[in-house]
Image (cartoon, rainbow, N blue to C red):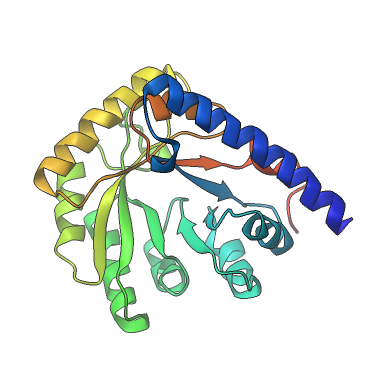
Length: 232
């Protein structure tokens, strides 16, 4: 079963990489400028080990209660990206294993994450500001002028490194319009904070549109790992 699962993931990975390559060619971009984050929510630690053996070393998780034990179980040298909504009371746990957090969307969360990182680690956590493109609060994300305030708060913390922006395209928007808007916000942030050059955007269904509008990181789960029953 282990060999069969690795073969399944390898086939899916080849298809995803082909899509990324084609999207980069269409956009006149170098595929080396797009990092694939394998979203392993609901998938076991063994899948992360398979991915690492296949050369995928950037791994995304959405829930701390699943991510923390999985990060402890995985022995492969991977980079953990926390990409789900983050509550302040989980900041300490996430700071213990995450190399990057893509979902900082408030000044208070930035402060909590910075405080936790100061206590737990010697290296800064890379932070992307999660942007709400439509202002609907239930999805998370900073909106309007709050994006700049959160970015400034992250940049002010020595335990954090501001690296860019993240967003999910609203379901009722065309992906191209959503990612074009995100590109404008990303450019504004880079003007104020030159090191904030990353754009985390695009998933299994819309990665091509994200790459066309400058995504540097795409977050892919189902197209890479298939449909599986949730972990218990």
